[in-house]
Length: 178
Image (cartoon, rainbow, N blue to C red; front, side):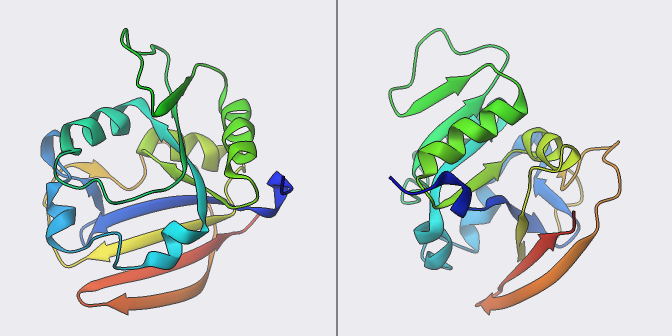
């Protein structure tokens, strides 16, 4: 088994040009109008596990018929309330954020741990657990929805290190300064 510390903790975001990661009512169908997992395949290839918030998990379940081709490895959902009916493809965690990240990083087996969900990402950023932020900026203005970062997140300095474009999608990558 590979050393879990070799993979990075990466906050992965798709964002509208006006700073929303989900539209009103947490809609995310607008994403698939602009990109698929084939847009930047190297990201999926570098990902060994995903840590997701419960809200993002629920949105993903509603959208599962629309786009099921992304394989980010083992899926972990951090929640206060695991569902009554277990999902055989997901491990539900009820621990603190540090333990959740450690558990998911171990499962990533030396690859990157992808963090999805505004609240989970903010918790990871606030505790200094994030190495990189990856943002896909899509050519759309949503006008309202879920912001990139929730209110109350302290200032976090970033260092840009890469930007790529594929069609209308621009991928920006940042190191989190610690």
